[in-house]
Length: 158
Image 1 (spheres, helix red, strand yellow):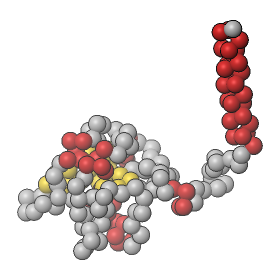
Image 2 (cartoon, rainbow, N blue to C red; image 1 turned 120 degrees about the vertical axis):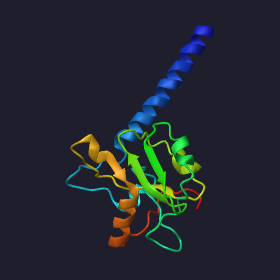
Image 3 (spheres, rainbow, N blue to C red; image 1 turned 60 degrees about the horizontal axis):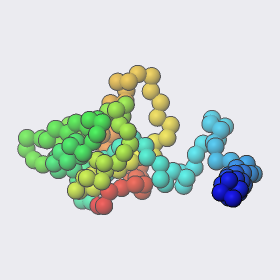
Image 4 (cartoon, rainbow, N blue to C red; image 1 turned 135 degrees about the vertical axis):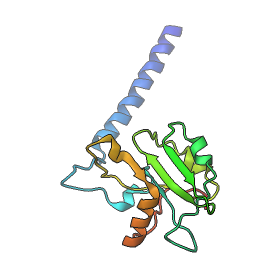
């Protein structure tokens, strides 16, 4: 009797798996065939791209980062380098090595000022590993000069 019950449970499990497979077989595809198509910005809402510094509320060209080093301590990949400036709290240097980043979000979650967010840069291509070391202060300045809209993606509690 036990063997029959085990066989029925196995058959039920097989049928559930086949149902899921058949539903996904006939559902619309989610793959984008690049370069013929690109991903729309609306579909990047939960995408975790390379980190970027958020803009300050008073001055859009400055970051709310106070160089507390909590993000550096929380990072398991040791991909962040923050050097505090001598004259104030603002960082002098903010380097991010994307080649070591596992995109876990520990740094974004621990930032008390909400200075870090994930970007939506999907098409980031480099030829050398050195190009993956990003200067986030320089990037913030360039984004401010281009007047790009702020990242509305996964931000910390700002």
